Each structure stands twice: as structure tokens, then as C-alpha cells.
Amino acid sequence: MAKKVTVYSTPTCPFCIRAKQFLKESNIQFADIDVSEDQNKAQEMIERSGQMGVPVIDIEGEIIVGFDKEKLKEALGI
Amino acid sequence: MVYDLIIIGAGPAGITASVYAARNRLNFLVVTKDIGGQTAWSGDVENYTGYQFITGPDLAAKFEEHMRKYGIAVKENVEAVDIKKAGKTFLINTDKGEYEARAVIIASGKISKELGVPGEKEFKNRGLTYCATCDGPLFSGKDVAVVGGGNSALDAVLQLMKIARRVYVININPRLGGDAVMRDKIEAGSTVTVLNNSQVTSVIGDKMVTGIKIKRGDKEELLSVQGVFVEIGLVPNSGFAKKVDKNAYGEIKVNCKNETNVAGIFAAGDVTDVPEKQIVIAAGEGSKAALAAFRYINQNR
Image 1 (cartoon, rainbow over the protein chains, first blue to last red):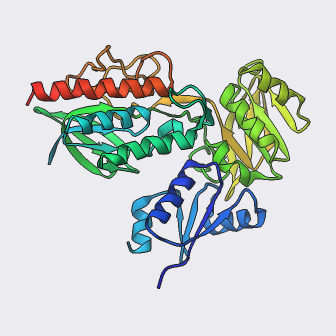
Image 2 (spheres, rainbow over the protein chains, first blue to last red; image 1 turned 135 degrees about the horizontal axis):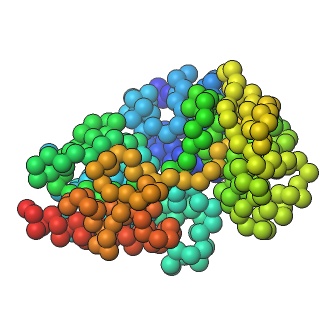
Image 3 (cartoon, each protein chain N blue to C red; image 1 turned 90 degrees about the vertical axis):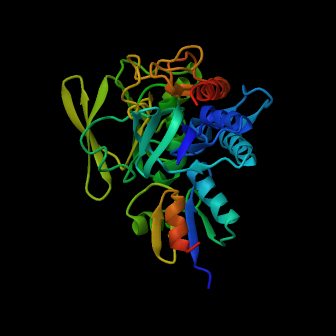
């Protein structure tokens, strides 16, 4: 079963772009949430990650802040 | 394994160096914090030859594509900590392990300058950020402070004016610097308060930032803000290169062949004392450094 992945990001942050690129290249499906467009989702991201930096990547409830390829691979089991 | 060459950094200088190193069939590795360096953070680029107009992230993606074409080995998210000479080779210590190489190119660029006040580290990403472009949208309807008075600070203010409820500008100088066009727009903005002759003394909060203490003249004031954007310029990312000569700004001194005072250590791009910090210059310097390193490696094999 594929894990449920959500990416909270803004369109202008380079690490967000790279994180999404990496997921696409790895054939991982994810929900792409633009927190600059959706204040409720922005608040949800802040509450769930306890911080205000983007990107925040939620992998089946495991929160990863920033773009860390190794951590992502581990959490995704790839 | 002993590499011929380790390149530290993957901005325009490091990536161009890697392309030249690959074409010269060196056995090498790139260790870097990120890909694209400052180019990835840049807005519109209109002076990189061959592109009349390209955005920073797009140009950074082109650089990366070029590097990937050669199948170059890159370790991302790695920060150099120290470089030590060990006989004829160098040991490059990083936060993710140690690497050994005959030669090194330092192309680690510049990083945001920190305020150096209490609360800064604690509240980083908890309301305090160094990237208005990235994190700005999270401060919609909030009160924020931009620290700085140069172009990068003004750029952040212009972005935040559209998002935040109120923007305070904490400027250490008697008046704002930067371009007149940007200054005019900011001074005309009804949601912006510019505080000149002001300095942040601490960042306070609980879970997240709730305010900053500032010194204006000899008065201390508390400003209630939920966001702090630090835009006080950049410093060379050269602290790990302890044995390498630097100038008063911390820039690594290089000669016209990109050699440092340590034989076998080369440097290129914004981390060096080469005048003018430009993408096209960093790229050119990167190629020079790779060719110089190639020669050095062959002569010392």
C-alpha cells in the first residue's frame, strides 16, 4: 500500500520545488497544498509541525520539516 | 576511497566546476548543502549570457540538469565542518562523514548573516526566518518586522506589504538604503512603519515569536510581532576552511588561478575575494578552478 503523502509548500520556495521534484521522480503520489492560498491549511501546517518554515511533508502522520532526501527515503521506505 | 577532487558547494561555481571536472574524467564528488545556491533564491535573471530572461529557480534547475547529464556524484544536505591536510591528501570533515581527496575546490558561496541576538536560534522557523519569499505567505494578516535597510530588506518589505497586516522595518542606519524606486513604494505604503536608528536586541516568544526588543537611540522598546524577517545581508560560508587565508570580510583569498594559500585547495565564486558577485562570474570562476585543480592533480599524482 502506498503511503499517504502531503506536501505543504509555497510556490516560491526552492526547497519546496525540489522536494516535489524528488517525489515526482520517485513516482510518489502526494497531495500538494499551497499554504499561500489557503490560510486554514497554513494554520494546520503550523500546528502539526510546531514551526513556520516550508516545506513540511507529512508521510502517513510522520512530519518532516525541510527537504531532507535521506529522511524522506527512510520514511517512504524507498 | 581517495578521490581526485572534492567540490564543496553546488551553486553556479560548484556546478560549473563539476561539469569541467567530469569532462576531464576526474574521480570526484560534490558535497553540498543545497543545489543552485543563491541562484535558486534569485528572482528574475536577465544578465546570464544566453538567457535574456530566466527566473532564478529555472536557471538553477538548468544548472542541475547539466550536472546530472554527466552523472556526477552529489551528496546533498551535507555541510562541511573542517578541511585537514593529511600527508599528500585532504580530509574533508562534514556533518555526514569524512571524505578524502587529493584536491579541494571550495565553492560554498554566501549564507544569510545572523543577528547574533538572544532568541534568534531558538525561534528560527518559529516565526523568525531568513527567506521572505519562502515563508512570507504564512504571515498573512499578521504583524511582522523586517530587519535591515538594504535592497534585500526592501524586497522583503515589498512582498510582505501585500500579505501582512503591519510591517515594521528595523533599520540600524539613519535612513533606508537600497534603490530609490523600492524606497518610494515602501514609504508610500500605509501599512509600513520604518524605524531608523534602531537595532534588535532580542527575539522573544513562547512556542512561536511574540515580539522583538529593539533599541532606538538609548530607549528600549518592545514591539509585538509574530514574524521576524532577517535581511541584513550575506556572509561568506568559509568558516570550515580554517587554514585558508581570508580577507577582513571572511572571503577566501585566491589568485588569478583560483589557488588559495594552501597548495591543492582552490576556491571559486561568492566565497572568494574576487570582486563582483554575479552568477556568470561565479560560473566562470568555477570552470577556472576545475581546470587549475585538474592540472594540480596531474602534476602531483
